[in-house]
Each structure stands twice: as structure tokens, then as C-alpha cells.
Image (cartoon, rainbow, N blue to C red; front, side, top):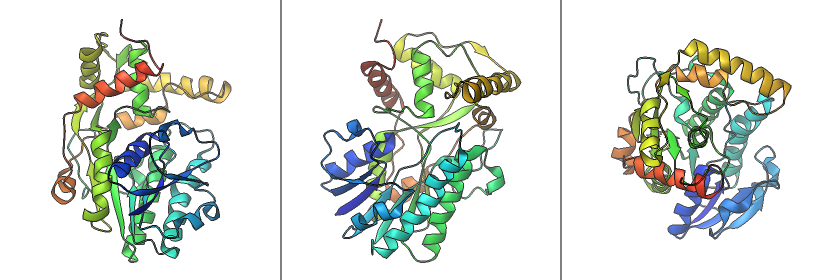
Length: 332
């Protein structure tokens, strides 16, 4: 099977490329001129230089492909130019879906995000059928992913075979950027996590997310959304697990959201707007943290064969990778 894959130089996309290669897929990998290709080492595939913002740059490479896996996204919780994020996440998804139709590609698997779901402050576990609208989206990343997902849903309603996957918070090795979740690990390893807020995440092993991308090609129902999640954990539980792995003390101080918001406000202004660097905390993160992002993966288990596996091994693998690659000091 010939697969056109976007995002292969990123965290989840790297693991998806590995999973596809292991199944013998013939890969065409969309990369930008500026992409760091280190994450493609050991993956047999043809690289296509192009840009999601310019569909004419990659459209010819779609010819002859059996499927598209669209994993690429602009995943940041702070950005100086939000329009750039919408151009990639929303317009880029719409244009890729159109180009795939025009090239006669039979199947598309679109990697959305659990961020498009409507979470609650009381920690109730949600699923794909929990009512949600654009007004529930906090910040540009969530809004852009929600609008992109609507493009995928609309394409499926018009007859295109589009399956939508919604990973929760993937963790594992090769998070080179790193993602916002990876930064939690890096900050903890570097002793920059003195306190925590009362929030919660669903952590999932990135290898299981990648394996299910491959299975979705044949098992997924067009137009359906599938949450791919693992363990629902409070932030404190995540930090305690990291402490158990590393021996680094877990923070004991819980701070109110009002204090976290004040810190994030000054971080955005001083570090972000004045110094032009990415702030360590953002108001968007604090607002998102008020809701515990707990989710059920029952649909994916039943229809795609997705497995909920313990996240501890993936956390250990992530920590070992960050240490081995210079993001944090090695074992003391």
C-alpha cells in the first residue's frame, strides 16, 4: 500500500511512520525545506519537499497513493502570529483533503486531537458523543484543531472516506521539539517544577497511538471520531510517577489557579512579547488546566482494536530519551 504521510518529522508522525514501515507500507513523506530530518533516520520512504500552506507543492505526489495519513499540525500553546496556525491546521487540512479527492486517493486518516472535545471542571469522563461547539474551545490551538476537524467531518459527509483519530496526550521517546506535554517532563527533570495546579490529563503511549493509525486504515468508519487514550491522571499523579522513575522529589505545593494565571500573564508579556521567546507558562494553558481532560476510548477499543496500556513504561522511555539526548541531566 502506498501511503502519503504528513508530519513524519514530528513526535506522533515519527511513530506512525515507524509503524507503517514495519507493516511494509510504501511511504511518501511530506517534509518542509526547513524540517529536521533526524526523526526519519531508519525509516525507508521517499521524501517530498512541500508545504501544507501551498497545496501545489505536494499535490503531484498524491498521484498513485492508496491513502493519506494527515498527522502534521502546528501544536503550540503560544504563538505570536495566530493566523499562521490557522493557515496550517485549518486551511492546510481543507486543501489536503481536496487534493486527495482530486488525486483519487481512496482513504484518509486525519489526526485530530482530544483538544476538540468538551471537557468539564468536575472531571467527568467524556467521549466522542459529548456535546461540543466552537465556543467551548480555549485558545488558538484548540480552536484551530476544532475547525480543522469540522473540515474532515464535512468531507466525510460529502462522501470522502475520512476517519478521524483524537489522541489524548501521547508520551514516549523521540519528542524532539518537545511538545507541551514533553516540556512538562523536561521541566521536571531540570528541577523547574516547584509547584502544581489541580488539573488532570489522559496520558497515552505514543506507540499504541501509532499502531492504531495503521489499523484505522482498514477498520475505521468514515466520518467517525475515535478517542485514543490511556490513563486518566491528575497532574500530581503524573509528577509522582516521574518521581518514582527518577528519584527526583515530586513538588508538594499546590497553587491556586489565580496565582498560576498571574504568573502566566507576566510570562507572556515579558518572555513572549518583550523578549520574543516562548514563555514557560501561558494563560491558555492555565485556562485549559481548569478542566480535567479525562476521556474514554471505548469506541476505539471496540471498533479499531485499540488497547489501553499502562503508561508507566512510556513515561520511563520518554525520560530516558530526554536524558540521552541532552534535554536534561543523566541519572545522578
